Image (tube, rainbow, N blue to C red; front, side):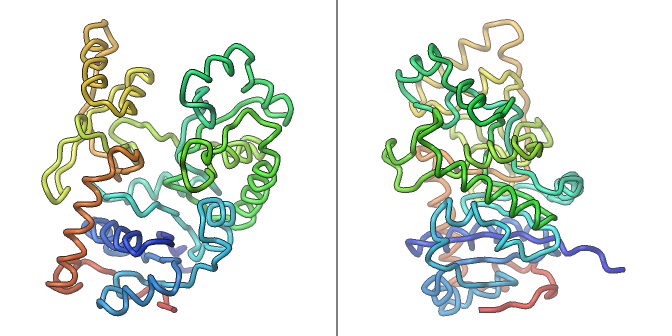
Length: 334
């Protein structure tokens, strides 16, 4: 009996730079995983760009992403349509891989469906990010949402990594999440469009769906075994090629949450203050499986890195830049 095929799935749409980001991300993955296939769903212009520049063979499967799925919820509320492997790990394109993911795959294999996240979401998850959060707290709107929908707990989903080996369950999760999104007016969640974002989020609806279906999240923060950690300039040490990466990791949830502050001076001052409190300043130096450039104010280092990798691919060729690629275990289709 053949072993199940494990593989990664990425998706891109919009500006050409996003498919270049995907190429750079997979170039780093191939430093550590030369065996598992990678699929890319993208619009035809992205496919032409990869083919024109001789980079298409970086991916084992390339398929067209229909226009109706070219959005965050359009893709991540329909993951069952894109789970092309027996065991599929959906990953965002703004990630740099930092270590061999074999142990991560072993741990994920125990789940029919999961997403990285936290067992319990805080009030800021899907809520207002400013002073308006105080009113939400006073009125306990989070609890009202849970009661209205018959839920007892709201996890925090970080959708940069989502795993499934059961398409039926994945479809059930996605359809339930889509239904919750249509009822957003009955929840305490705020539209990301109100925050100046161009797209709606999929995360709170996926979190509600996983809670409804009694599906656990895969712990986002696991110290040395963290599947992904956020890139934060003052908390991340790395060389130019991101081949040697360590992140400062605070075991205290509140202290580690300070990493999201966009003002570096304020963030560093508060962390320094926390370190004066007994037990609050403890930290580890860890290397996650992947470094995620999710914060808008922390993306420039990834943009610069991806631009260097793309230029190297054009000048030196795919075989020299990414020599570690698997023998074809999946058919490449366009």
